[in-house]
Image (cartoon, rainbow, N blue to C red; front, top):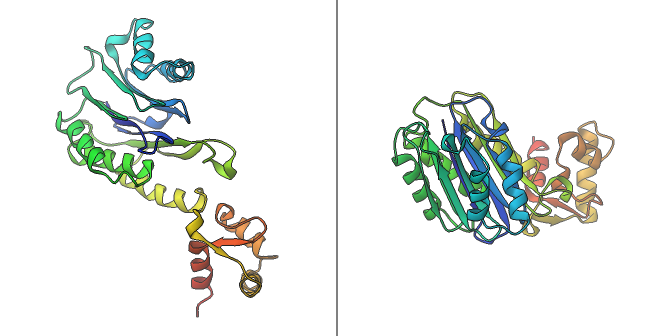
Length: 274
């Protein structure tokens, strides 16, 4: 009832899962990942305990294949399960139980595992593999995963229709304020076009929740600081940092106002234009 891709980035610093299904809130059940450890998708008759178990095995040094073997050995329901795993080194493994409903199957490659069940056909996973392998390795993992998920959807996706989608990406220090590893954690729980909606949310996530790259930072001179403070006062804010907090741009402006992201500066100047 689901199709997913589990992968590691080309630079070996990020791990993630993208998934879609005719199932309510698929992101609540299928994906899990820990930076420096790996990522997993558990689906079909999903065994959600697989998530913690697989990540624990890999954290102890098991490869994706060994972790998968251990999961299946201990699970009497293995014939009804489908699971994809990628480990810290980019090793991949996938399992489709013989009782999974057609079409069901998977593809594994260097740094990725792609799987699906109750699909319109094998073309879905083939399209996802092609999209993954031809996507720009310099692009963010979130963008590459979304591109593969979109390709699977366009190839037919879940044979029952569309309802939900999710995207999870982890990287050391990538979370809010640099205090955890969650780079992207987005869910569309119930929507007639969940994957396009997921793409819209990723655009917003990159603006509000992604830290600015060095090349995006504009040094704040005395002259620019005066401009920003004047803008904030015109907006009715106590000062510019108060405006930043109100608008949720704190990941895009230095706490000491030593720099401002070019995107936010463009917003300020656009809002201030006559």
